[in-house]
Image 1 (cartoon, rainbow, N blue to C red):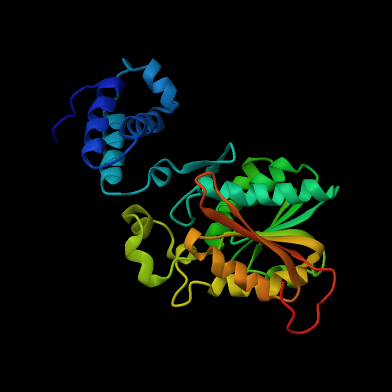
Image 2 (cartoon, rainbow, N blue to C red):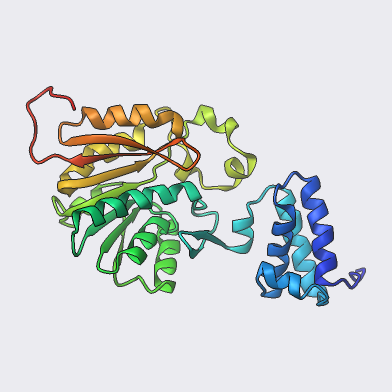
Length: 304
């Protein structure tokens, strides 16, 4: 076996950045520093400060393996095993969807509602919790809140459990396995929740080709694809969530921008929901569709 040539961290980063740029990675320089830092146990910023630090042969080999996987399209977050969301560092793996910045708007919607109603000890739910990102962010921002995090995949729940434990939130985040609202109803939470949030799968199978390759090929299909009906998860949530909410409680759903109108119409058709609204992300795209639990069931056929 031929020994690897000795290189410094700076030399490896420059070579890796060139390779990543050639592969079409936009933030090639930053990603090269992140990969080097992961191997060296340094932050990306510290890699710059320690550019003259030699890479040991084992470190060089490990960094080269990560670089090859990144060039092949594997997401950076899976390679380093973590992602940032709401200023929190979360463990991620191919068992869970990588948290997106757009999903922070879902957190903002719930926080705005809870703070606007001045509930002292809110009860909240995060459906399809995945890594636990939304549940952890809500528990982090609302120290007196109790959050129920639901997922059908035991591997995702195991990841969420590690995240909330490491963040010191395990005492206030309860993890439940099952499909959408069913575990919450089984837990006796009917009519008790102040807000229900969800970022369900909304990509129809025929739309898969339009996704970036690193999303389509590496992220968990159960968290991405809906099957033939792109609204199937929303229908299930809207069927169950109103029974869980207190009067005036919030149902907030993240959506694909081109599905916002369809999801809003779905909520408008539910006789137990009112005040349907669509909020946009910072790019001006519809991102969160929400509604409030009405105080009473309106006459049959009435629409809001």
